[in-house]
Length: 419
Image (cartoon, rainbow, N blue to C red; front, side, top):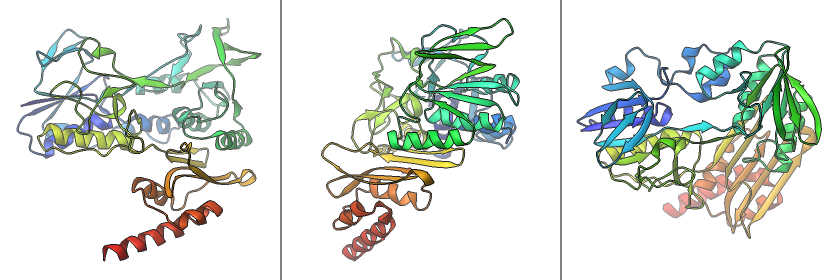
């Protein structure tokens, strides 16, 4: 039996390790599209901040880790898949056969279609090679523009601040982290960053980037004065890496569509991680949840099924936790509420504290938190277990900060019923 895992991020690495440890009875090849040891993209900001060396980004650190597990790491980029022949073609011209195949190819950065995005000093921050470029082209006191204030952008923001540059952040949405925070929360994050010397420009669109004779850059803005920069870092979003699947017959949408067993529309081909559109726990619909916990769980369950042990995946929960210059923001589940549902809100802008709970009937379905760090796991648990709150919903509607008391009371009631 030949198992091939394409993609050496968390989903691919965990899948390969799971196959090895389950006594799969075959050989495992982990195909990495980069000339690096398998690493975590989430560690790149720590490298930029000089908190770790490059080796600190590696997913596994022991010598011979993959070899000792019988995993062959091959550095190739897949050009196409022939599902009928059960083979992969590589961009280098080679090919490889498989009996079972896992697609864990992650995502690719996208840039706006405007002039100047191909200039040398306009960089993404997605790979180790990108990080090397940013380090080589930024020094304390440089004027740096970060395009994009989404989840990834805010992680990069903190790393750039640690590099002691003069940072301006440009976001075309009306708030920061628009995909995990409402206007109230996003504005509070902006205010927090501004107080710490970061210039935040929301509702602002870059229309073009040009290089000046001295090597600096000028960014033209829609309806606003141009601004200058020594370096531009682009973090305007990512898309699932599926270009090599064209003509393969694998069904895709925003990602590769998978069922509860991580199977694609073709036999013996599975998908996991940021390339996979699995089931959302709250809606039951397909979606891509591009977070490392989901990628890790996808990889484990996909490998379990590939090894012949049928295991269903319940679905992933939207869950984001972000540290922006010391301000912790959190969103879980249907954080923006649900039609016909109720909301309980507590906001203290002066202290950068915000909590919003969303309900459907007497069940909590979503949470937004800002500056809330104690017991937030309880909120996630209440959502995931769909715990009926009963009379405690009324308590939470009056004061959302009573969630710990609600959790304990509901847990005690469940214990008594079980007894």
